[in-house]
Image (tube, rainbow, N blue to C red):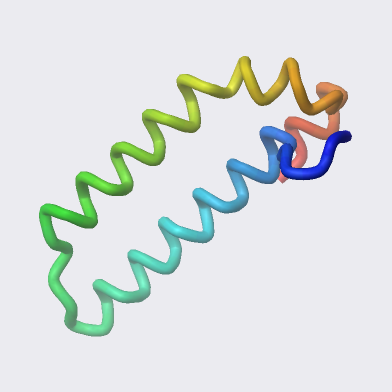
Length: 68
């Protein structure tokens, strides 16, 4: 796989980490701001809209892509 490209599973794991970090942050008494809500929505939108692009470039097998 060329340097700089990620498997779809890598992108999903990064997004899951961001969501968990945001939930932990909000449970520590911080407010879930409109900006962070917009950022997460944009990240999900960008990731899922470009998933076919990443899948076609990354040379990942279906099994590698579906592993979490």
